[in-house]
Length: 224
Picture 1 (tube, helix red, strand yellow):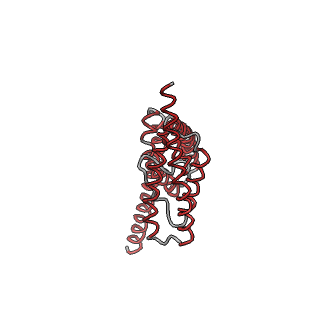
Picture 2 (cartoon, helix red, strand yellow):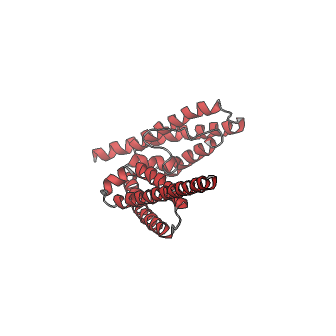
Picture 3 (cartoon, helix red, strand yellow):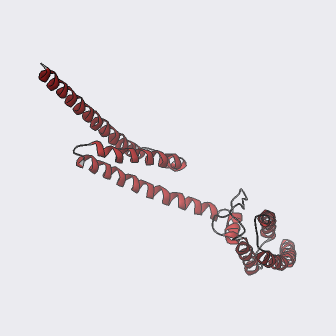
């Protein structure tokens, strides 16, 4: 009798274990299906909507991709599932490359249509300063280089700037100076501070004389 009960108990445990494994495999299959379906659904999203919400799409993709990869471990024979997952991943990467290229083109077109942004890019580097006028990326270690690039760029292009350009340059210069006041408290070296002072002495008369010249030139052309 004891042997019968023991055998029955072992059988029930085996059945429960098998059932548990089947449930895990079934759930894993559903997880892969969800991933594949999600990627397929992106093909039905309007291009402009997809680009406008790309950050959210990417976050959801990464989550579902990770779940699908983990689910493969719960499949006894996952070769077919792996093939489906790989195909969906390739489809997503192609879509991502397409949209990122289009977004890059749109960004470049926006800069080309915005003279102020072109000027900011020249003075500080591509995309470093936007409409938010944030200089938080400037610190005690790079501020001297920022001033050097700024003054050097202005000196090189001073004869080509309009009065509006000079006004924008002054606005950027004052914002940079404001950031310098903060950086000084964060450990700016005396040597770098001295070099920055020399650059400021170089910039001041260059700005005054050339802005006056630009204004005079505009007035002269207006009278012609």
